[in-house]
Image 1 (cartoon, one colour):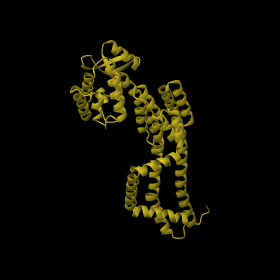
Image 2 (cartoon, one colour):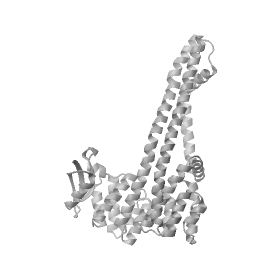
Image 3 (cartoon, helix red, strand yellow):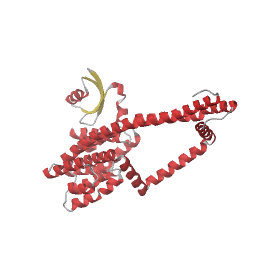
Image 4 (cartoon, one colour):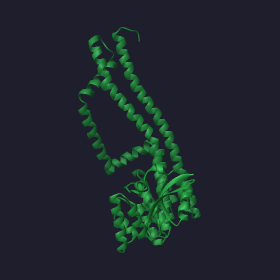
Length: 398
């Protein structure tokens, strides 16, 4: 049996902290509910303080926490104002506490929850606000929050899996780059002194390396300024509409399979979640297009909404756009014909999220091998050039 720390609230809105012994987290939740409390947070003691975990920062992870806790409170029958009041009390982050209090004030003044959220676009994206508005209109806010929680969890899981897969290549590139710089700026200068004292001719490759080493040590500040300026210019260009479009086109050309699967998963999960939550089809389609980060694919989907308005449905216009994979188009067409488009879209998203993880895993494996080979060749070239110079000066056979 494990001991879990928990943060819960009563129906009157009083927050309570405590510990409970249970076999797993699910059983701990059931035991807390059996006592008449509403569990907000359950963690193992080794994970740290509860209120530190409740602390709210403007990030997707914290938005997920806020959504999950609000969904639990509303599902337990608490009104929205009391639920928000509880969340503001358990939140230690001052700025977010002010945001929740501002939302609570707007609601108590007669405003809707969605309108209150809309006043804080940095914390709550447009997609989130539109789903809340649909839940309010249909009287199913707790259900919509539950769907939003599932959506945010899936998006976070996909993002975390991609980021975790890229950690090792990032570490490899940094350590390899630092190793090469150390060889060029600290190790090679010592050899240049030896070569100068011994005299004689040295191979061309060694002269090139020594020239590069000398330039780095002498004009490193110029290289640093050039890198910073170049980075600033590239970043500025990529922020422009034309630059972003060209960059997205290049990514689509180089990593087409990965990009298409990623955008297909995003588009289908967003559209499916919106439709399942009761958002109108055209509004859901417009919001789903906004979550696509690749501008080439997003622009190709502009005619999809036009086709939907003309009564052509979604499967045909999506096929004409030519940006989604054939399997996804087939599944969407089946869902549209059977009247289960929302369910089929979620299935498409799940299938492509799984496929994307496998594709990223294969890509990272290839990237790791390519980086190791490239760095091995560079470092090997440096070492062999130095050895050739030493052997040529000392008249030793190589």
